[in-house]
Image (cartoon, rainbow, N blue to C red; front, side, top):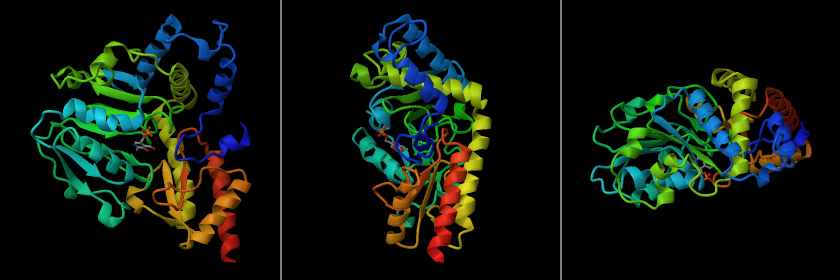
Amino acid sequence: MNLQNSLNFSGGPGALPESVLLQLSEELIQVPGLGISILGISHRSEWFAEVISELEDNIRALLGLNEKYHVLLLQGGATQQFSMVPMTLLRGKSTAAEYIQTGYWSGKAIPEAKLEGPIRVIWNGRAAGFNRLPTDDELCFSPDAPYIHYISNETVEGLQFQRVLGRDDVPRVCDMSSDFLSKPGDFERFSLIYAHAQKNIGPSGITVVVVRDELIEQPHAELPSFLDYKTQAKAHSNFNTPPVFAIYAVLLVTRWLIKDIGGLTQMDRINRRKAELLYGLIDDSDGFYQGRAETADRSLMNVVFNLPSLELEKRFIQESQAAGFSGLAGHRAIGGLRASIYNAVTIEAVEELVNFMDAFWRKSVR
Ligand code: PLP
């Protein structure tokens, strides 16, 4: 693999697996059997209908979902879902939807929901500087809520839930943008999951939504057709011109997950090893690397940490870039450093980063 692609630890668009990048680069010129570029293939072609159908099946298979779930490939990013969810499930309701504020991105979802109906924030981690997640004792869910909403992995602060929240008699809605398809789980306990592609499963431009049939079949407010899950489900995500290239790239990543990696249990094993390597070094560095999140709530996807001074953090970024690494600066909202170790980042790349960090630490404290 191109060395700099393999050493990309960006928290935004993540790297894609090398085999997928190579296939895409060939198919930019010519898709075998069709003779033309992927960029010139009609979204109304039979070929593309098969792409969508296989991708829907692959996502359902990877998540272990039954046929009652629609798989939608939408535009507008996860941000659009901050609005589309409450437009569908909250408009016209008198009881409050329940939101959990665990960091930067859940904080963005809340004001959008408020535009559509009543909401209740049942836990807010702001006072603790968003460095931990709530315990079960701190969460009290109401049986009357139209739905609960939370984010499984806070990308900016590096906090990840390792359990499912809420009650089984209230629809669960979860933003899984930054840990989607990174580990197995009991996904049928969710009524709606959304995740943009650009972290674990492809380039930016599409957001995967899986939604249970009864949620979109129930009567709800009149919505613009484009923003109505039902329209999108009926059209198999081909209501208007979809981003064909991005959708095809996600199909290739799901094939890679199924065939090359061997499924989500195996992906999880690899992801845990990567996180273990990085947190291991952080914990053994005598306080030089300071992990931001409390140990129990640390993310396996976004390793967020600080150094003893801003000066050292600046030097870390400069020297890491000179050594071929990229994407290690923390999110602009909180600064510091962040190593995002999404699915396509290899164990070997993490080992290289750990070696660099180890050398940087020893050199800086000498
Ligand atoms: N939710 C989470 C967890 C994210 O990490 C992000 C962006 O990184 C968003 C939502 C916003 O996504 P988008 O830029 O696709 O709208």
